[in-house]
Image 1 (cartoon, helix red, strand yellow):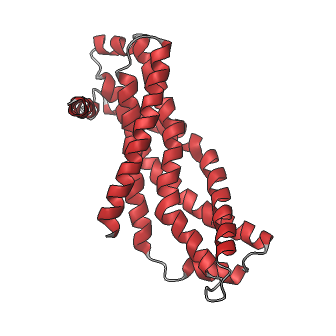
Image 2 (image 1 turned 60 degrees about the vertical axis):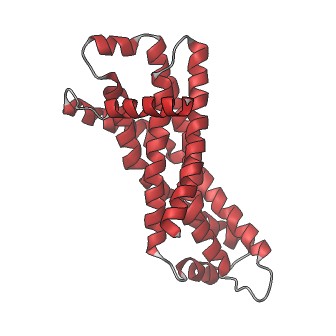
Image 3 (image 1 turned 90 degrees about the vertical axis):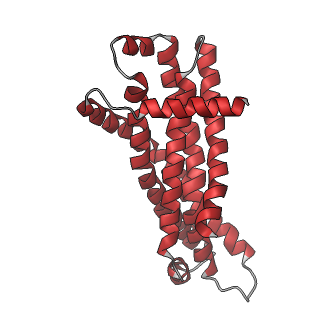
Length: 246
């Protein structure tokens, strides 16, 4: 029964977060601030991980496709489909759940234990809306951009390292990434990234918002936010894959 209690509490929290804002112009400014903090601030780690993951997939695929029956361009196909279908939308989201989620939970949790949220409530401000709504919108707007960025860099990294390692030719790789390309796969990845973005922003915010106690509890809320958001990302990855690809 505790599951239903927390689900109901989370639903009411989200309902408050999407309540009518006191002054919409303030929310617009906050959204751009959060895009800069949560989105642009994550470009570096997404770029590094995507490039090296693309390189690893290329080298591993070339190693496993040693049979003369498998054409060399299959390496490009493997890198393209791995990056677009799973790595960029799901694995990058898990990484962001750790980086962004812990930041959100600890920021809001600290505001709770230092009574800053109580001060907002006393001033008649919807604290959930003011603190959480801009983070959710910023995440929904920028996470798909991060996913597309990851796709491009992963495929580019596979190309560069594959050529340097001599495991694939430039013609075969480019032919592979264009072979029977289905644009729907990108749409599928963007749908998943939007769902994951909502989870990454809202679940850690929920745990941070209901923190009680001191600094130790802030750390626990941050951990819970990352763990629960990661589990939900994996669960919804399975659900969306079944719904969108079956």
